[in-house]
Image (tube, rainbow, N blue to C red):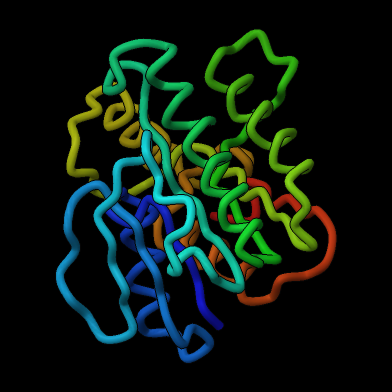
Length: 209
C-alpha cells in the first residue's frame, strides 16, 4: 500500500516513519514535512508550507493517511495558532487526500477529545474528530493516547515532570492513565492504516500501555 504520513518529524510521527519503512505492508511512504528528511528507500519526502498546500500535487494519491501533526499552545504561541496546527492542518490534509482517492485516515488524537469539553485542548481535538467524520473516508480511526512517553526534540518541562511521576507510579495507576510509549502509539496508527477496517474506530489509551 501507499501511505501518506503527516507529522513525520515529531515524536510519534518519527516512530511511524521508521516502522513504516521497515514494514512489508507499506510499498511506498509519502511524507510532506516543513523541514527536509534524509533520503531513504521507499520514502518520498516533500518540503511543504502547510498554510499553502499544493492542492494538485500527484503525491497526494495514497491508499491511507496517518496524521500525527500536533503542538502545544506554548509552542504555537496562541490558541489561534494551536488550533491551526492541531485542527486546520489535519483537516486540510484529510480533504486533499480524500479528493485524490484515499479511503482510510488515522488520526493521533488525545484522551479526552470531546467537541463539547470546557478544556480548550480537548475541545479542539474533539472538533477535529467531528469534522473528519464528514470528509467521506470509508475507514476512520482515532487513536487517543494519554501521556506520551519518549524523547522530544522540543523542551516540555511540565510534560517531562508528569512523565516522571506517571512512570514512578507505574502499575498503581489504572491502565488508561498509564504512560503510552510513542512507539506503541505509532504501531497502533500504522496497523489501523494497513487494516483499513470499514467504519469509525477508537483506540483508547488503555490499549496503548
